Length: 242
Image 1 (cartoon, rainbow, N blue to C red):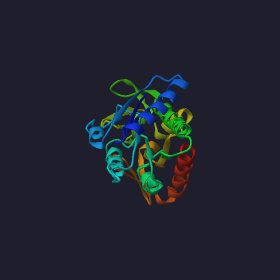
Image 2 (cartoon, one colour; image 1 turned 90 degrees about the horizontal axis):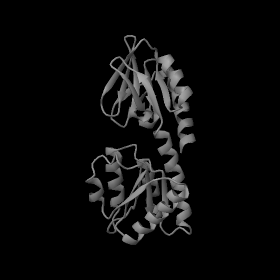
Image 3 (cartoon, rainbow, N blue to C red; image 1 turned 45 degrees about the vertical axis):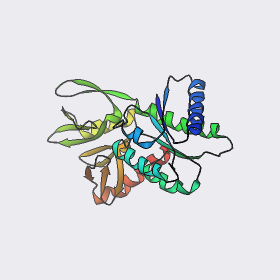
Image 4 (cartoon, rainbow, N blue to C red; image 1 turned 135 degrees about the horizontal axis):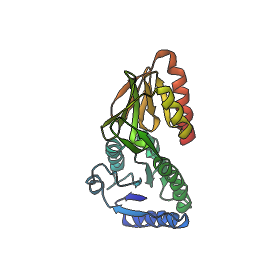
């Protein structure tokens, strides 16, 4: 597990780093932390796929640059959990607009406890995203992380797996009903939004009448008669995973 810490105050960087490392040691988790003293240095790392979570300050040089950094991070890697650590409560609502896991105050009475609770959530997300499954595609048999799958489409009696690396895999002689049952037994993150589409809920950016938009920008239709059920199932899943 690798955790990024981004704050322009060295004292707080070290304090957060120490809290995270205490948590990792306590739970016998092999992990590393990396400190960034400004947002540009963080963003120079591209997609940030090497990191499993980001602890991010809100104010840099007296300005709310952390929100701008968070939006850019979210655009590049919507799956990266962000925990805001700030001296000011006033930015908390805006923080959750980029799907922040938590919003912590630097002057909290027990910052160690707050960070440990945040790391519990980070660890839960991390564990869930490590789950794998083996699929027999037309070309070859492949073991995938379930979170590599954005959505599955049923078309012309075949299943097409659209993956987060912009590739597509084809599987024949299987129905979407069968695949839905198989994935539901193994993992509850896939949502049937349409007779032809099964979607990974971790990849949903917004759900609105009558479509779902993925973080990739892809939009998929939801039939009017199915929308209420889809919305309810999605909200229940979000509540369980918040």
